[in-house]
Every structure is written in C-alpha cells, then in structure tokens.
Amino acid sequence: MRIAAAQARCPWLAPEAGTRKVVDLLHQARAQDVDLLAFPETFLSGYPFWLTHTGGATFDDPLQKQAYAYYLDAAVELAGPELQTITEAVRDLGVFTYLGISERARGTVYCTLVAISPEHGLVGAHRKLMPTYEERLVWGTGDGHGLRVHQVGDVRVSGLNCWENWMPLARQSVYAQGTDVHVSVWPGSTGLTRDITRFIAREGRVYSLAAGALISYQDVPSDFPFHERLTAIESGYDGGSAIAGPDGAWIVPPVSGEERLIWADADPAQVRGERQNFDPAGHYNRPDVFRLEVDRRRLNPAEFRQ
Image (cartoon, rainbow, N blue to C red; front, side):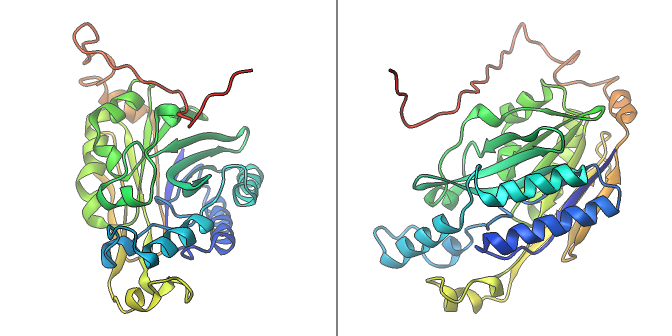
C-alpha cells in the first residue's frame, strides 16, 4: 500500500481555488500509484495564523470581528459543493483521502479532518478535540464522533489533528481499533513533526504519516482586515511532512520547504512483526487495570423531540 502526504501551498481563505488544488494533487497522487493521500490541517480553507501577529485575544476588537467573519465565510460545510467535488474526484481516482478542513457549522468553525473513501464517500469527520492555545479563539471544541479507524484494502488507517496526537487517550482510542497506518495533520512545521511522528510509530507499532503545509503570508487576500500587517512578515510555515516505519525509524525524515508528495510503501507484515514484542492495545495492555471509554455521540447544541 502506497501512502503519501501532500506537502503543498494552498490558496488561503479561497475555497474554490483550494478545491482545485486538492483535486490537482489527487491526480498527481494517482499518477504515482498512491493508495492513501493525506492533506495538512485545515488545508481547505486555511489555518488562522493571523491570531499570532495581530493581538487575536483583544476583546471586542472590530478588526478581529471582521477577520473572524471573513474566516467563517471562507470555511466549508460537510455537505457543501467543495467537498462534493473532492469526493467525486476521490471516487474517480480511487485514492483514499484524509483532508484537513475549516468546517463551518452555523456561526462556529471547527478544525475537522475528513476521511473520504473511493467506494463509500465521506466516511469520517473528526473535529479536533481541543484546539491549541490561541486556536480556541476561532475554533470550536470537538467531540468523539470522528474517532474511527477506516479499512483501506487490507490496511486499517486512522487520523488525528495536530497536537491532539500528543493526547495519550486519543492515541489509545485508535490503537484499540487496530490501526496500521496513522495519519497526523499539521499546519506545517518540521519542529512540530520531528518528535511525535516517530513516537507514534514506535508506540503504536504503526506506519506514522505526518502531513504539513507550506504557508506564505503573501497569500493573504488584499481585502482581509490585517492584509498589510501580515504580508510584511517574511517567514512562513515550512511543511515538515514525514513518514516513520513501525520500528520508529525514519523512512522519510521531515521535509522542509519543498512542494511535493512525500510517499512510502507500507507493508502490513512489518506492522505485525513489530507487535511481536509490544502491542499497546493487545498483549501489552491491561484492561483489567486500565479502562478507556470513548463517547462517539456528535455533540449537537440541542436535541429536539416530537
């Protein structure tokens, strides 16, 4: 099974152009015989990086309100035209896809990782359990509904967003479902992926695939409230996509600054071999001592009864 991360620069807060970019990368993946392709965190329609540089926590600030409204408008809905187009491309090309999106649900944006199957369409929508630090200013808190492992051929795959990969119980919830390939998605930084990618591979005895984006502040739209302040910043996000094998060794160490597909061939037999001496959800687990219970209900704002 060939697995890949799409390390790329996506049009920021431009969902139509972003959708075209996703479809183009899916075609590239198909041409390289990729079976599973992972896109970075909120690749469509963009990571809220303006918060870091503009005093995002300033209460009741008019420009911050305008920025959030812009971000909300650029987010996509699960049943919207962008994901419909991408789902059709996944079906036609036969590439199982993990895609990070900024999901609009009423007046709230969620950091969501969707799983799209060529055979079954949208099979998962995992909202980030806990937005990190200033992300909480723009993203809602997720739930356990999307903590699911998916079958792709002979392999079981899972995915988590950014720092929730550091949450031990979130990792255990996918190990317990027998994942063989774990996908972690990131806004884009070698510093973020360097440690955790190998850690997950070693702990879970899985192939660990990290997908990070290339982000340039020059992509900020001219009508975004903080355009001038942001485009004056020269630094950006350098990617960090990487792949580690089930023994914890690098197959592809974190890649910086390159826009390309990062891929490797995953052999399920190697996963099984590494679990000979350690399986965190199997023979090296003590369910009589420790117990994990996962609530998979979608947490809706209200429940209506007839």
